[in-house]
Every structure is written in C-alpha cells, then in structure tokens.
Image 1 (tube, rainbow, N blue to C red):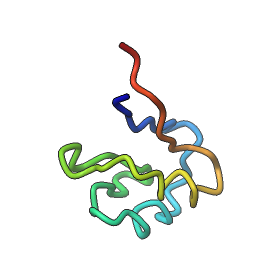
Image 2: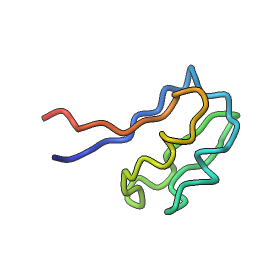
Image 3: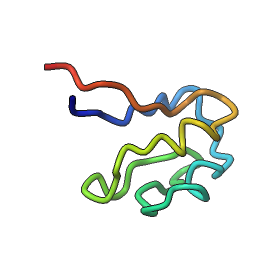
Length: 64
C-alpha cells in the first residue's frame, strides 16, 4: 500500500532532528518549520517520525 508523509506544522518547533536523520536529505527547516523539500527523494522510511520529539511528522498509508 502506498504511504504518505504528513507534517503538522503547528506542532513543529524547528529543532532539525528529522532533517538530520533523513537518509535521503528530503527534509529541510525553513522559517523555523520542517518542509518536505524533495518529495521525489522521500522513501517514507519513518526515520523522521521515530525521532520527532513533538510528533509533528509521521508516515501513514495513503488514502485511496
């Protein structure tokens, strides 16, 4: 089943942990919030979700 990356910008405090652990460097911090800068690079591995202390980013099954 396809997956999608969800970012809750309201919960993100821009700590950069997700960006640091992204193996494909698909995430960036801009204006103190995380953004998916390279959607084509994201492999939806969940490393960002595992590291985010504020539960602001996660991977889920895509709606069909």
